[in-house]
Length: 406
Image (cartoon, rainbow, N blue to C red; front, side, top):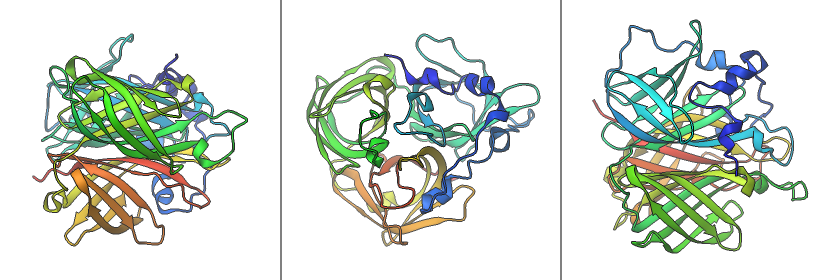
């Protein structure tokens, strides 16, 4: 099985981007009608417009750390030309992101050499920028957010030829503790057959559910519900390795087998299915369940969010990524504003069992998000898995970190 990461941009040097050249970047053809579409698609900008410039050489990182991280990536072309989606129009990967205390970072993955080192900037407030020097005239930069008091981080690589959310958790020493009850969230890009129905669910799906894992790593019970509103029972076995690495073969009963690999930190796991020849690629996020309902007083605050969306209407499909600020406020109200956009979503939220929560958008788009917060109230994730009846329906995965107060 060939990993789809070989078909797309690589973080360590952006070899594919350089090979194709900046001049060949295509503009996005979508004309989104929903709020998120307005927010996340100023992506007609080229790589030069989006990411050139970088940090001045005289600017040093405010915080320097020596930490290795699990790095998951899901991305794709802003516009898919045909149905079904071709595997070479999308990519996913699992790497290790190395931060060094001299302010430099690099990446590595099994079977590949470690990338060249480049500067990172980590602010005392958690703001994160990674730079990638293409040549002496062009330095790309990727912005995101880092939890200095926890385990998680995320950043974006965005251009007119590639839209990517990269996120993960710190590597831990030893094996991860997987025997517990977990919330499960994810997003998958589907490589349908040419004879399959041309419907949104055969391009992109999101899902939410839960799983119970025993001491051997086996799923003893589990179920998810995906964008088809279809309940799928889960089975499988998780095998833990050192540094929190884990392999997770999940069987979607009545469907097919999905094999995810990734890493688990204290309460959050980030895994990817990066093989395209089983008909899909995707990301799976595990959030350890709490023993009671979420504490609203601890949930209230400012969350920095990275997101990945799959627009899944045949003929108008593509991928987008964006960042934003989620405010959860007293009175169970919320708002979500997006970077470089005046659009703001808002509504009400409620908490459920074991750290689960729902966000309901009240501004006319009727979006409903399902999510969960980890027991330390440092990281949350949620999905929009409902395929709306609109000109540009989409599904999306959101990964959020509590903003650091300084």
